[in-house]
Length: 388
Image 1: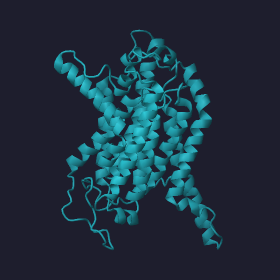
Image 2: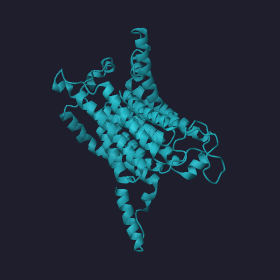
Image 3: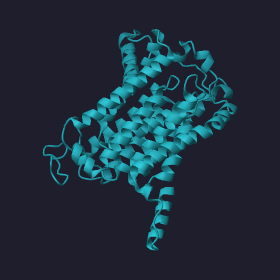
Image 4: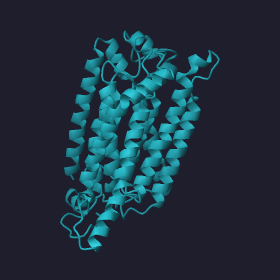
């Protein structure tokens, strides 16, 4: 909104023979970085009051999960407020609203994804984490099938909307790693012969699974101080770069990856989300003053999956999100093996970060090493773009 107002003011000055003073805002890179800085400052400034409000409302983590019951820190974390994802989502939304071009389709849908999934998480957090105050017979959050139904339903609607939107010839391409999507050396963006294009059902299913799957994967990972927020911040750096490349005709031609028209505007959204995650780490680093809860985790994962689908870089983004994928896979493997064998376990406990903790790693070691691995995966993922 602010971007549109200042741009209109600049145009008004130009029409009267004066020099515009806000031309810098036309540079998408600047607006993306500015959104990151603004979101960071919003979380930093509003964090203390928000945490105090959550404490007054007694929205605290009861430490009642199986994982928490087996960790030495369970008692110390029992009264730490959760639902702190309102800080992340609120800051990212405000920064994007002010600095993005709100006429852009991908921005409109991206904000909708972020808010809707935050709403699902907030409903679950509120029901679950105020249950003790309401009494033992109170409902312990959304039922699993309710949460999944909302996630899949919203993700499917988003996928259909993206399918109907024309983002260029390669909007629906199946982007396979190491495959060139354009003929090298051509002056125009000439698609490489033999590319595979997704029909509508396949596109909708793939996009729905990316959005809902990563949403749940981030939620599963959110179990230690700074773990999910730190990994998400690193992934957002990669998303920022992918949006710049996908939205640029020149960079797409050089790197031979799909050019999606107007997707560069998502740099503002990913920059804002990354800045908000970094700001949240100020309050979430060990020992945490607040947890993001489902409100933040579901929203962050959904936005990551959405951006991956828009830029047609699902495989690259899944590689960046390797630690999220490992965490989600550890739960699925544990549950499947437990049911198949009548009670046997592969891990002492799932998700995997708690298993490492029980094996002797300190919580700080687990968190920092997961960050390190994510940074390495980010480097590998971005380097693989050049290998065509």
